[in-house]
Image 1: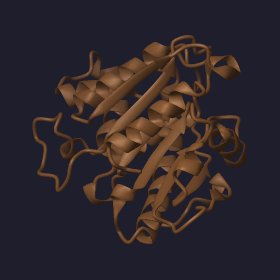
Image 2: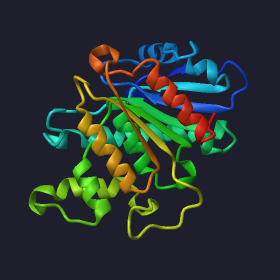
Image 3: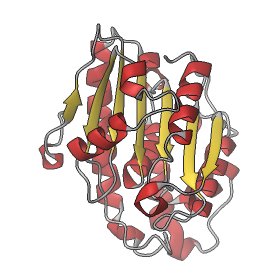
Length: 264
């Protein structure tokens, strides 16, 4: 499988020292990899340093990973428009994950996957779609995001049918085809996996003007239901209409999260 050239170039920030880790970060709709990288890597912790300064051996890749989101007020509206975009985005990012793991001597634990808003949504989907546990990232960091097809995914993890099979069958089939349910301990027919599940941190503004905080809470509950170790954080007063990382609080929490799971 090759990179999908429709997504354009990847913005790469090379490490300041020997390459030891890689962070693949997905920006939100309407942004670019370079714009997101500049804002994220310039955001400082409470000690005045940035995450890139705290992680000098980390290579940062910022990618466009978009799909059609008809409405964030009703995330179930026109879900048919999202199917191809999510599938293509997941395939594209999976190629890059494989490339980076090879650069990291085959160690997926040294790879971080993350993103904000729509990029965060695709990062979560990419995590859930990895059929091979050997290429799952070592950690996931997302912010101000949601989980597309959340209701379908939640019912599948719970082993429940859709409320209206005549209406829901198409999306249930898409979710069943894409997501690696059997590799998560939240399912009854889970297969034996070779390592622990990737830890996830999700941050969200309670006053986010674009993505309602309840959508983020719902995503966190579903990931926990899947058996993933999830850390949920809420903030208020972030910039850009509360649809950005809360500085420095959220950056401090991300750094503590990465230190606690020994990713740094």
